[in-house]
Image (cartoon, rainbow, N blue to C red):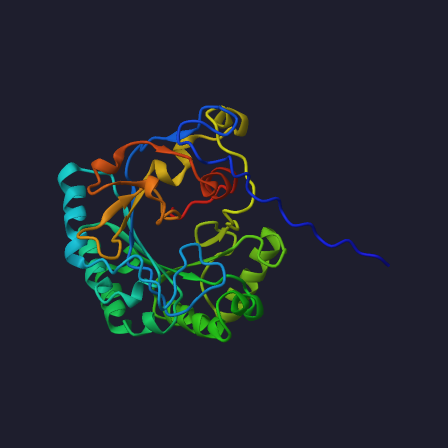
Length: 319
């Protein structure tokens, strides 16, 4: 019985995503206006306790391209939100592994004390457990205003460990159990088609895992269990034109950059900068300024991730 090997996806056309105004075919590139800043992301630094095979931000124990942001550096942006009456409901913390940043508990307290919700993306491994006492204190003071989203790339140890490192699934699952047993509000992030199963089968697999471990997460809830599309900027994807909104029956207001921005501090920089998107920390064209007001201008969808992840993939990092 013969079999046909799967064909590799076509590489990205080098003529695409070069001009922020027009596509390779000369059509007007789509842009997204900021309709209202509802989520502010903080990249706490690119250092991580592990190295994953396909980390979009290339986090590792050695990559400090994005330095640790401090509580003092975050505070002016929180002040700006209050002074300008911006409709920010949630502050999200990502990395790297956010719990490697020693200022994270202080930043969370500042955010939560001002009445915002806080979301932390974590691998739930040793760095998180090192902050157990601070987390329990935050839980006691702020309850469900704090959410921790744990990265489990797959519901099985084999595939999760293949992506992250051997033994990491057991450690992450232990961290997730600790959070659930401690009464924290917990979510999980996975990958929609990891292992070629398809989203429905993935959700069934996570549901079985959560039931077996007595973890109160509804695997059918797309927020409680976020399954993200794969990202590979080298694989071909259509450019998004202004005509695409009507063709796809999609509103630009539904994209992340219509309602969110991200703070980063580049290694050697004197101060943090505001970026358009959590997915594009290294692309200079998506750096919008040094304040939230400066960063309120429209964003041109001039990157493969804009098409694959947000427009066609339908993904969003927040609620």
